[in-house]
Image (cartoon, rainbow over all chains, first blue to last red; front, side, top):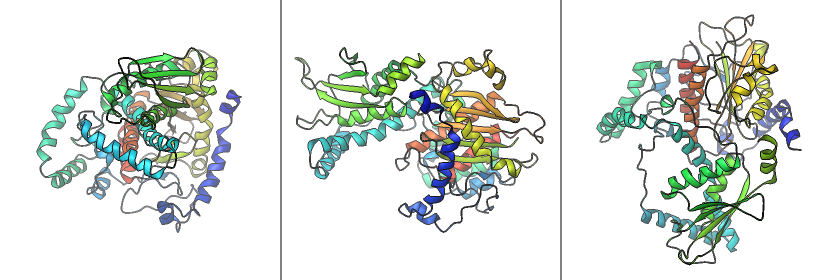
Length: 321
Length: 170
């Protein structure tokens, strides 16, 4: 059953997508779609009208847009001079403060819990809401942490040497600093994107870190790097269930985010469950994660995160490895 | 050489598409342009097979019927860049997988009118993919971006095109 699903020709799905694209035009619920709804959908053969304003981004109702031969990096840079976006930030771990104080986090988390509590009728609904918050963090963590760990360690220092000076100098007048920076990009043209502000990490990478293909590899990733990123230490244990084949457990003796929560009837660690599930889901290991409070003599707030993988994960594991 | 690049999401939906052409080199002929998305999607099956190979590059280049499909100099143990995965009448198709299994796929065409098969320079293509991967991770860092939504940002678009100019159109 599994292999059949994999071999399904993608051309058919593409046809369906084309249809969806066409019908998406009538869906006015989305603000972006609403704005585009008066546009005519061109067949992809027709060349998209060249707009003088330069790049306008990908529009899925038009399809791929050609690079115009005359559009130089300069004109693009000048049209986007005023805009500052996520793409101008560095992914380097040192680019932003790497630590958040527990107090600030506790306030935020308290607000999240109370918001979930006000919006829900049952305890399980509160937990589900927290779980959902965490899920979207997990999705992002997988890509971010893996990408960061691909960068060779030595390049971190060079990043600070290169970026430290100008970034510090322009920190005072951020607005004019941004203007100068984009001007510099325009002047140097296509020769380099390398700039103190949009320093790309990818140029320092010789080999990307491997994608995790096996169950144990991906669990080790959650147990180690993810936990270290979130809580500054690896989790206390990673155990395979002896009863069920698809069940694994990550154990945290002293959960940090719920350390100020004394209530036991709502399990606020479901937030972390969501993060774990997000990471595993995106890595194509669909599963359900639940948190259980299992106090031990020394650790009275010990939490066990139970990860139950879907059957297809085990099937794939048996087929491939 | 003209290239057609697309990022395909987890539900096989295109998240981003672009065509890279330059002035001195001719672009895709119109009848082929229409076919590009189909050619690209046909190769997704191969990607999904390679996705779970321990060594996607060496398995295919080592003997076997698929050997000639792959570019010669793929030397490393990373499994993100898949190298040349497919071909279609002189067009070469390369693939790349992000950690969240987003599929980055590109069709390379030869400079001429299809008489000579397209050559893929693994080094620069790999660099291009890695840089786009970084841009994609940055996109994900935007809390308002939902996974598998089309990337409509003009900044993303212009950055990808600058990268293409640097690595692909030489």
